[in-house]
Length: 163
Image 1 (cartoon, one colour):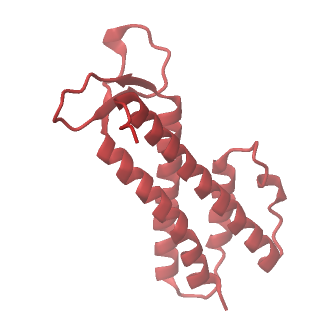
Image 2 (cartoon, helix red, strand yellow):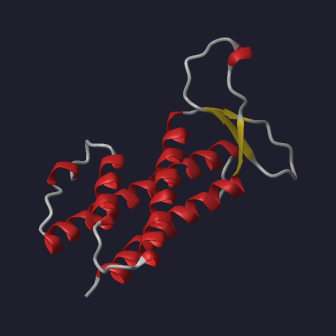
């Protein structure tokens, strides 16, 4: 197999990250359906692929805030931490997909990286935000963290909402 070029390595990672977030969104949708069936909740208005992931996240968060067992602060804390990370992942995906990327000339023996600036229509170079550097290793770690977050969702729901 031919090794990937620098540009292909970047595009592969960006695609994998986008795919991981899409899988997370699917799992959020399945979780909403589970809540709808188990607790007679109406979630049909957010289970539309044309609607943003944020609406599904917001609805799922609201459903998990309903107390199942009184006095379980550990439940609330673990769910709050999960949702905080999920919203961060959503924001990261949006930043990456809408960013202006700069592919750098990488010298042999150095860690490959890319730089981006968040979506802007600024044309004055002096007024542009400072580029944010992301190494390929950081990309890979972010992708792995998103997959882990996706798996954790079902574990949390099973742990806190099973009878």
